[in-house]
Image (tube, rainbow, N blue to C red; front, side):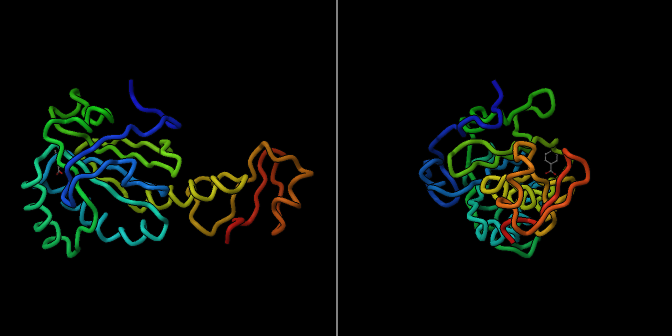
Length: 211
Ligand code: BEZ
């Protein structure tokens, strides 16, 4: 059965471009992103892994470890990383899992045979410090993902894990948040001392609490 939000991220041991890792041990008590790409030495994947390399410091700032995967073998990954660095003007500073036997790909249901034969589609899993899945995304091979959106989601996930807010459409870090319906009007002044505004009884905004 497909993995769902709130499920524990399945653990595994795998070979990567940075050595063998046990996923849960490697995550430690921080956040993680596991993302699959269909194939090495392909154009869209090259741009994606380059973009992720350039954003890696932003993920590190947020205590998020990045891990890529495809069903290609290790020597292929290692050769291709040189191409990514050369063509995208970056240094890939995160591990890439070599999964030629598709163990991890199958564990995470990353192979969708009706869409792409025998390769992983573009899956993303965001894992919280409790090892639970906080976000899943599935894109087709033809469409490169927006990794800025992953940073935006991480900002929202980390904020809403600590404060009783949700984030509205197209929210970005620093913008007003929505007070969750479970908070009563009486609780608002103590929980949100920066103030609030009521548009409808169910639509209440407050400045971002952790800024
Ligand atoms: C690509 O990354 O360009 C790609 C990979 C597999 C199928 C189609 C495109």
